[in-house]
Image 1: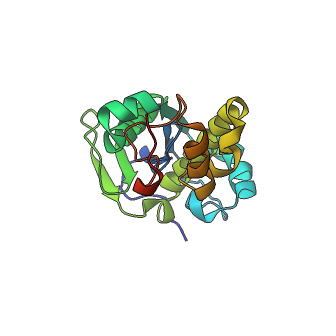
Image 2: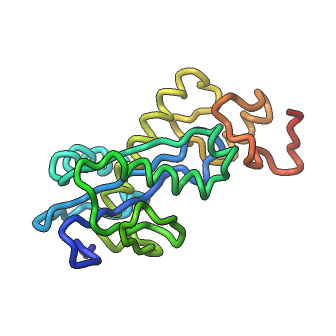
Length: 199
């Protein structure tokens, strides 16, 4: 069972990101504050849920959360500041969008930078331990997937509707064949050494 709270604060915010390991598209983060009486039996780390379950949970979280925010940080910024900084920036931007200021922030993973002067704690595998981080992981994943479906229409040959920009064999073969797009992260190793791409 996932726990509701890590701290004693009323407005505790959970935050998580999606798309960190992708070769294309943004890194997307969400921040969620849940009420003390929030309950949900299927909510879990988004990676452990089917696409159908994530799609069912998204409107439930959006309706029942005290507030939520979702933010993308795009390829150019990822290439400029690196993926770790971009992930943290996306989380900060998602927290900026909350209509209620959090009193405490719990973060999935082990890296974060102070947000204003709000106390925070990083929690490894937090999306499988706390409901607000799990809710943030579901929103980050569903919003990012929707964005990837949109840009798939522009470049269907990379099959982003399936691989969502992750480094699958098929995605790498398409990069080898067609080259990189404006949505690819040029700071990432788009191809293994044996499939060198002349950029």
